[in-house]
Amino acid sequence: MPLPYHLRDPNYLGFDIEKNKQRYQLERDKRIRKDTEDQFVEVVTERSDVSHFLTDDPIGEPRAPRGAIEDDIDTLVIGGGWAGLIIAARLRDQGVDNFRILEAGHDFGGAWYWNRYPGCQCDVQSYFYMPLLEETGYIPKLRFSYAPEIFEHAQRIGRHFRLYEKAIFGTWVTEMRWNDDGQHWVVSTNRGDTFRARSVALATGPASRPRLPGIPGIATFKGRSFHTSRWDYGYTGGDPDGNLTGLANKRVGIIGTGATGVQVIPKVAESAKETFVFQRTPSTVAGRNNACTDPEWAAILGPNWQRDMIANFDAVREMKADDPKLLEADTSLRFLTIMHRLMGEVDKATMTTQELAELREIADHIIMEEIRNHVDAVVKDPQTAEKLKPWYGYTCKRPTFNDEYLEAFNRPNVTLVDVSATQGVERITENGVVANGVEYPLDVIIYASGFEITSDFHKRIGIPIYGRDGGSIYDHWHEGMRTLLGLMTHGFPNLFFIGGLFTFTLSINYCSALDPQAQVVAGLIKRLLDNGDSIHPTIEAEDDWIRQQIEAGAQDFAVPLGSKGDDCTPGYYNHEGRSLDQRRDYRREGYGKGSIAYLSLLTDWAKANDLKGVEVLRSR
Image 1: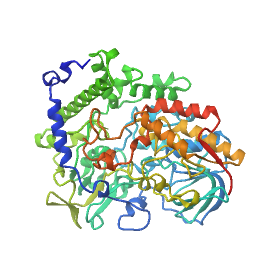
Image 2: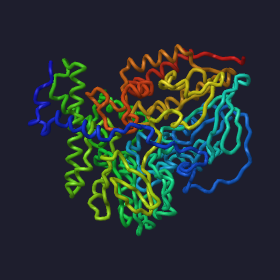
Image 3: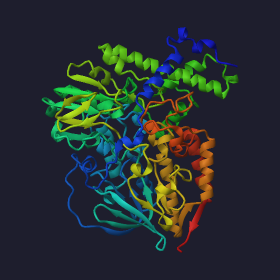
Image 4: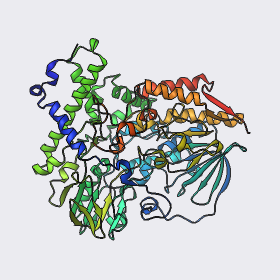
């Protein structure tokens, strides 16, 4: 039966869904650019006009000179963030000791090594997000941790599992090539190293390569400019808490108002003489609702407490469990709170799939109306408030949470420059930024433009990878990701993926599937080392896994609930507005039934211990 009429009645809701949808379309259309993702310039490691945005490291110690390393090893782990740390820890558990870890930064942490900009914080609860808490005996200080605590935990994992002795820092991979005769990978680095590895765990993560807008003149600016992942405290002064005394007499421009911009802009505004925020599309900004960890709660945690909390979080998120305390504490689950309320007004026993989709669309409009009303309640200037209101579906762009961002626009030294009419900043000059035909003289430009999270695979990974017969992995994936269970791909033996390319779409908690994946992969690596095997999935197994992914109902990142799929404002979820027929099939990068169903499949596959879908190779 149809949903009750009142659930779509403007008088009942306080707004008109159809009028909102018309506004969504207008706002989307004026932001669509023909160059879509090509509007961004790839930041490469080779020296170029913009390469310093990637290679400069104002945080770490200067790279000490060393000779090139040549080594034969069992396993090479590429990446020292969560994924790399977890797989290395699980290799230790399996008794695999002959491995190395390559990391571009000068310490462990991955994104949390680089992301130390002021105000940097995780949007997922610390108890779910920070891995290996039980093993290391650590309890986070806050419900939502700031970057320094997260980075310290990465170091803690490195010490606990004795991973520093395996790590080579300040080094990145320049090529990987499979040697069929020797049944090993030949891995080259920017330091002239050559590693011959029986297996490789690719653990580069989803946020390892900075993304930079290809604004004309970006290399001509004569002031200071940097990406937020290369924050220069030597220039700004202060620390991750703020107090950026070096900006006291500076005119600062910030380009980017996504999750990073929302966190960093309040800290800059506290210290800078003037702050100019260049915004193409406003983010959704809800309250953070942070809190200190209750010591009494922490004292009674039992065995497997973190694993159980992660499972409960995903069950609540997938609406397979109801936890009122969790819903109340975590503002990222506000959408589900609304859904639970709406579900109480319908007959769940007779609800069809279409009616559930309609109910989700109603919940989407309710939460977006709440967010826009929140802007009005906080921002004093009506014109500024109107520019900060997001007009798109809640699932179109990454939601953000912050208690200081909107308040920053009440400061007299903060100017919001809306560049939606020109689809972004027009150009950079020697002296500043040109937007809407006006030049804004600046002393420093900060790019809060994020990472290559959903870009083409070669941009995301940044490593030339050649498998059997010299084929490129990017050619193999030209229509979309091809794997078995998200772990390995045909034609690239003994190459395993840990997070980054697959787990990102399973749960809003990136770490939900990392450890289960790592345990399976570590077991596979131990097995192939013991037996002297090389393995990869068959083409048929890849095709079958893709079929399962599509049948599971996974949808494109930027398909708002209840829409046809092309209704979203541009952003990294939808390749900056590419139409559905121009995008890769994102269904291949997730599993539509969610993390719980995926982990069940993964566990069953590993327990069967028969390597179903895997071919064992021998030297030719």
